[in-house]
Image (cartoon, rainbow, N blue to C red; front, side, top):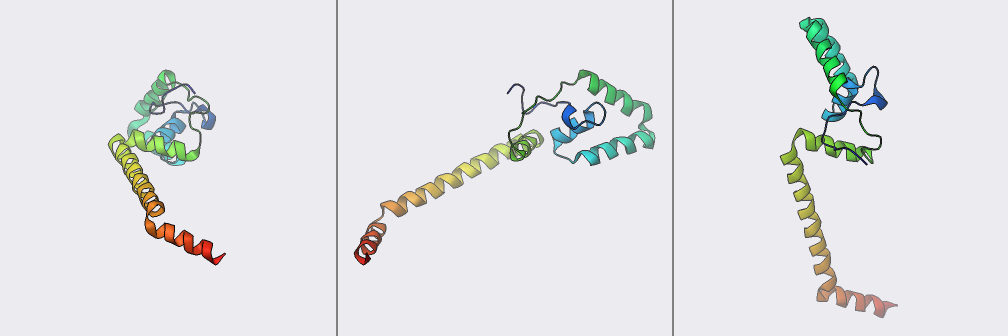
Length: 127
């Protein structure tokens, strides 16, 4: 895989025209239909030449999204969260690791405690 998952890319695979709106949708995690509608409304509401100029500049300067950038849809959602709020994402990852560590410690305690050994002996005696 080449390319950074935190960079903006033109999404040519889901493009209607140049992939700018699909790229914005992929980058932010917003549904592409809402991005397209917002661009049209912004253009019609008085931003006429500037939205088209910005669109063409982004289409000209942006790189195409590498194929296979994300392995799963969950992977894509994770990286969209990282781009929108990196501090929150790292805090969530730390929290998940703490939770996994706590659960593993509970499992270890359960299997190394005397009560589980006596329970296993009782189960063996019933056989």
